[in-house]
Length: 555
Image (cartoon, rainbow, N blue to C red):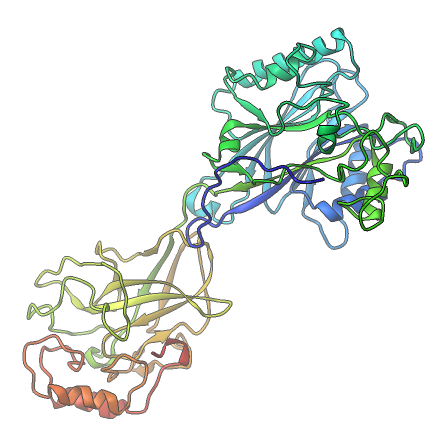
């Protein structure tokens, strides 16, 4: 079928804030499954391998054995083992129950409640998003999914039974005032959406005056009306092609199966949005109105049985049930952000004191700037960090902390910070935890740059997210390319890279010669950070001439 366009304002996709995720939802009446000698798990597998839903609510599941057959023979197959199911609670002596299958890598089932209605219970499944950063920000997004299978057949009595079931559903939801992200799906057996009163349950369900406002993606539909042929969900069979396992042979001309969405999902104003154009009746190509899904008399462009799915899927849909499944895709924004947190320690060779610390005089001389110093070349860093510089504080100099992606070592984030005499690094708030806001938890390379010592990067990617990482460049084998030099019990970062390009070469000597005798000034050539450019600084350059950092951190 042609997927229907929904007028929604979706939240803008952002690449470095909360990484959005999607959830594919399906509702499917599986036609009294299983029956004696049932072999439809094979057909179900064909459909599921194509759709791969994250949430599947199924109606007419007749037994726990049948629920497990669909799980084990059709969902968790071909190397997939991530699907779980909910308990099956067959209601009030009826024939069928609801079932939930869900992708456990994305979702967790928190609770399940069966709501007593005639003739089959409505089941409420409360799920939450299995956010990979949940341990860090300790919050997540909840979904409240309801599976319904209302009274079948036409007539005022049956329509009233459906309306009564909707009233019970709303009474239940009214008792849960903080219910969020509500989706109500299933086989409703509504025969019309017209306003003549034949289906009071439908209009009660979408009443804008309800405490929990629900919307239908396709309002205004009419049964047995050619204009709505691509939204009909029953029947996949006809008198000429009745299929097996029972079911209705009425042809594709009724819309019984639907998913209703909370208004905040439809408007995209909450944590969950309906992806525009994703709502569809899977396998209904709009060409088989009032006929069976596999009727060969239907002319399909390009040949085959169906214009939307393969012949194998069309046959599987026909054999599995007299209902089509309904699909929708949800876009979710994980709740809150999980800032990546790390502590860094490093020792600079030219100010190393030989006892695990450093000595520098820039702050004592009131030469240390209060704002970050990496805005010019070669760094061209645009940050606005400032530090409350105060005389007497054990400050060495500004450093630039960077994160690089594990996959391609591309630069992901930067932050200017202050290096203290004990080798620790503090942020602009004078706390030791360096935080990178709203980055996804992952493995990153950690790098440190300065004005006049070689840049260094961690030898291996480091796990960031869900906790505090402590990275110490003063330990052995912590720098890629073994750049750090051993000095007693510590490893120090080589001095003399006055141009900060990652290579100690003649250009550094040239920069030194610009001001070889400068006094009480803040210059890159003052590598021992005593406020003076002297031969002592030149000697550091001469000692390390030709040393270089790994290519990743060179400019």
